[in-house]
Image (tube, rainbow, N blue to C red; front, side, top):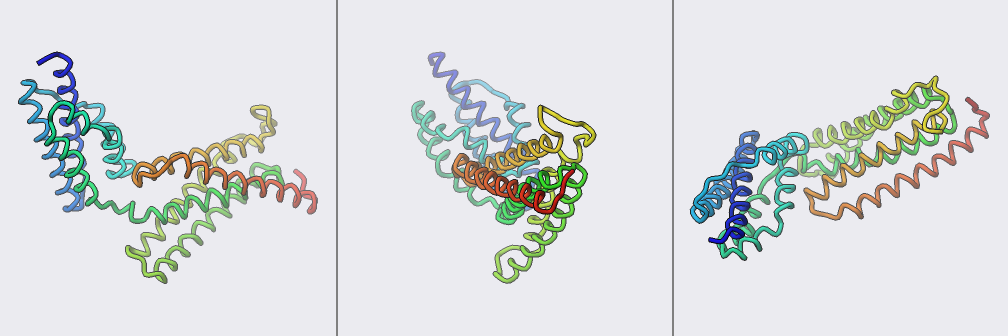
Length: 293
């Protein structure tokens, strides 16, 4: 066997060994017996592929410990579905590599069997992704706009932080209650209580992150990065908002296999327009009511 072919096979062998270890560890993390069984089945399939290649190369390989650790950590933070989709996405064209090496059976199994098994997996947080989107997107659009208006109307860090927290926390409970009533009225599958919880917690976390610059920055400082301190705090709030939009849309683009760019720019555009309108309203109301910091 020539060296180039051997190296290609060893690379595939290591990949299969790594994936088998990842699936084994993900299976151990599952409380759902169905998901555990499916993941164990995929692990066995990957082990069989590794064994077939091992007989050709005549060598044994160890899993890539870094990749195993990375996917286990991703699973703990974002869920096992995200971790699996990320792993499969990086190896999308692997079946063509198998075919070019004459391993047609493994190529067919990579394309069909594993994808069918993966599609059978169910993760609770994905069933309530709509509720998470509702809470997060509403908090981003409503509170970012409100903070823009409050910042230029009040020009006071403490007042803006107080008003933002009171408004945001009250809105989080309101959104949670609305989602509960909506789930009950529409008789959606899943728990109305869990849908309400995911809406509430995603809204509340977003609120805390958006208001945090007004709490962290020292209101006694006159300026920062060439801006008034309250203006700098608002810039950081916008930055945090865009990071939240980017992270969440990256997550959904992986697990739902949709375009990241279109969804990100759509949401970022809405965020910008609402904030700009609120900015104008804040200035106008500040002048009309004679509010001056």
